[in-house]
Amino acid sequence: MLYSSTTPSAKRAAFRQALAGTELLRFPGAFNPLSGRLVQRHGFEGVYVSGAVLSADLGLPDVGLTTLTEVAGRSAQIARVTDLPVLVDADTGFGEPLNVARTVQVMEDAGVGGLHVEDQVNPKRCGHLEGKQVVDEATAVRRVRAAVDARRDPDFLVVARTDVRGVEGFDATVRRAQALVDAGADVVFAEAMADLSEFEAICTALDVPVLANMTEFGRSDLFTHDQLRDAGVRIVIHPVSLLRLAMGAADRALAGLKDAGTLDPVVGEMQTRAELYDLVDYAGYGDFDSSVYDFSLEGNRG
Image (cartoon, rainbow, N blue to C red; front, side, top):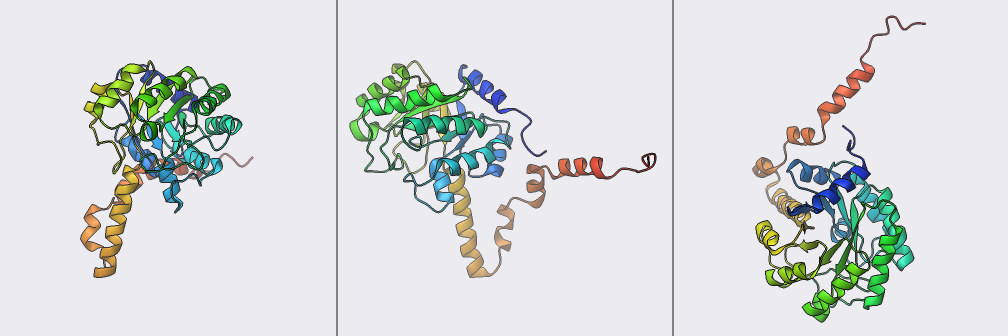
C-alpha cells in the first residue's frame, strides 16, 4: 500500500549486486508511476526514466528544455511506487560540473538507483537524430568525475553515456569510453551502435558493464535480449516503448471515437477496472481504512 517498502539505499545495493552477476538487467521505460508499477509486476529488473519521454509528456521536444526539478520530481514519483531500482536520464547534467554534482545529490534524494550523464553539447539532441555535437574529452571527463565525487551513497550508480559514435565513429567511441571509465564511471552507455559486432567490441574493450539502448526507430536494430546478453551487454533499456504504445493506442481510439461516436469496439483492449484497482492496490487501502476507522468506542470513554 502507498509506496515501496524497500528503502532507496536497499534498492541501490541490490542494483549493484545484480550488476556484479552475469544476467542481463532489463529496464523498460516508465512514463508515469503507474507504468513503473506495471514494469515491476511483469518481473523486470529495473525501471528507466527517459528524458525524451519526460519531454514528450510535457509536450516538448527532446532538446534539453526540461529542468533538474522537473526530472527529479517525476523520477521520485516513479521510484517511490516500485521496489525496483530506477535509472534516470540526466541529459548533460543540467549544466557545468558543479551543476552535475548537484544533479547527483538531488537524484539521490529522489530515491533513484542511478543516472546517466552524456557528452553532448548544450542544448543536447536526441541520441538517434542527425546534427549531434559532442564536447571535448576533457569536458566529458569533468562531468563524470563531478558526478562520481558528488555522490554520498557509494551504491548510487554513475553511468557515462557517450554519443561519439554518431559524430566521430566507433574507434573514437572506444577511446572516449575508456577515458570515462578512468574518470570513475560505473557503466558505459554507448549510444547508437551500428550492429552487434560493435556492442561485442566495446564490451570486450572495457572492464565495466555496458548499457544498450533498444529504442524503436533508432540507429540500432532491435536486438533481442539473448543477442545482447551473448554480445556481453549487461543492461538494456527500452526508453520510449511504453509511451509509444500507449499514445498509439490513444490516438487510434480517439479517431475511432470521433468517427463512430462510441468506444465499444475497443473496450476489450482496455485495462479493466478490476485490473486497474488491483495494480493500485485498492484492497490494501480498504483494509487499512477499516483497521483505522472501523472500531468500537466501548471502554474508551475515559
